[in-house]
Image (cartoon, rainbow, N blue to C red):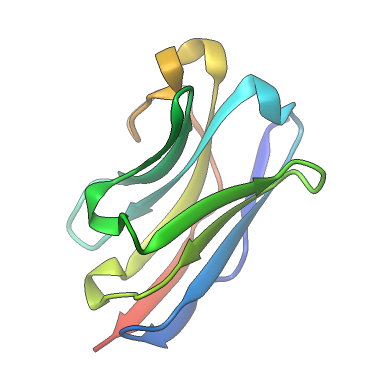
Amino acid sequence: QVQLVESVGGSVEAGGSLRLSCATSGFRVSDYCLGWFRQTPGKEREIVAQFRSDGIYYEEFVQGRFTMSQDNAKKTLYLQMNSLKPEDSGTYFCGAVESWRAAYCKWIAAHPLAHWGQGTEVTVSS
């Protein structure tokens, strides 16, 4: 059974940093496309970063500030968030889709067969 468990988020002031982690279990990481997504108030869930076949994709609004990484031994996905802005506040999710269901590991939050963690709250105050 695919399980994704995000770490507790947190509250920081603008300009601060947080690191999120996502512990995975129940599947072979190499068989899945992994990524971080977020949902901010009033918006649909959106991509933050994805491992794609040609490298790590970062959405424009986090480029240069966020870094996604993976520890294969610990089967854990990370998202290092620096220079946080109030508009980064929201619920962050790690997600996974079987590789064969997403060409080049490009997939959207609305993928019907995606697996999700429970989400973790990030609040950035100005």
